[in-house]
Image (cartoon, rainbow, N blue to C red):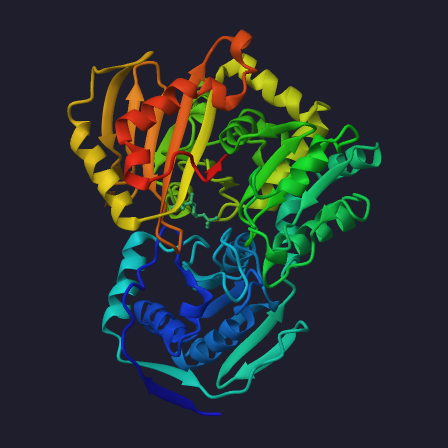
Length: 543
Ligand code: G16
């Protein structure tokens, strides 16, 4: 074994987006592409002697090769130890859990999350810091600067190590431990939730269906829901991770988890349905013939949190991303705790969680989590819901309907225009920004604009400022339209339009969502000229 220094030249565009660097698999397969990024991460970290690194991914195409490359480079960089998931597999929440539990310096997650996989699909890489959370912008920017000027990287010429079985190996002077991907994570879940109560609920005939979407959460859900909590075999569907996710889009929303939606809409549907995404950090919650929006899910969990053992002491605060509905803010107000509004991206919650300012966090993009780790967490959200259902004896629909009756309903929808021309999308946003200053006080159909701005966030912990985080038009009654460009796509641009209407009157709590939001949808089109700029009369995905 020896360590080689390899000459390289920089690749343009290795700037991490909302959540790491995501590109087509073919881009990552170019010689030196992955290596350049990994070396830039290591150069950002500096001396790693004596330190531990965690490595794992969602099992998508190219995962195994990338893991071996990273192990060889970690050895060349002088890490003392690497913990790697068996088969190269670790869900994003499990990486966060393992970093924290084992006092690692950080971790590398190989995933493009909910983006499709396979040879023609997407690949991604993300660095998580010592607290287990995604690197903040200051770190990702430094990594990016290194990628721009890189001239060489260092790598061991050691042979591949066997990832198939838990055990120990060595590359150069570095210890490699292949770990069970589920064990540490499952142990943490047992500390947070009342497994006995959930076991009793299931033993009493309560039925559930968890859709692993052939992605990473299948093994976690099988071990916890079936093996530990007694759900009958087959309760977890699409449970085996596949390199191409079975040809599907591993994004747990009503459009992409169509099989689960159909199961939950049947007359003999289970009592509870859920799905998670490619890397296991997102979740979708369903009742029988009933879907829960991610924003409502956060609000309901917050309102009932003290029913779960891990949250019995109460919540310190609730944080949500700006485009997420304001339902959780109402709960925070009722509980007398602070509510935080951050830009899109889980990395913005890290400081609030570390500083003990927030306990629960959530995003409209099917992400919910808490201070137990520093990532959003799909299986955690499922267990939290099961704990509430067991503790209250109520159905999903009952819990949500009662929540609306108490707090009012925040009707919510997101319209995505995927794969549009990037230049046109940027022009659309630029033309919106020009209009903002003159919008306050304008009459727009049923609505009057209270204020319109481009969201800017000042982190209350470290004072860092993030600008241009989404154009929002907020009406005097709290209804809102938000426009943003996605930071996770790999083809053209994706325009996201977020629509929210508050309705206090329970007599109007059961309208079809798109109908309830109809007037706001029209205003969004009028104000932004979406059809003119994008050539699209309708969104590609509505959630
Ligand atoms: C990532 C981020 C989330 C964000 C989502 C969508 O999720 O971690 O914070 O809400 O992308 O981002 P965008 O609207 O920019 O596409 P994931 O599950 O893809 O890692």
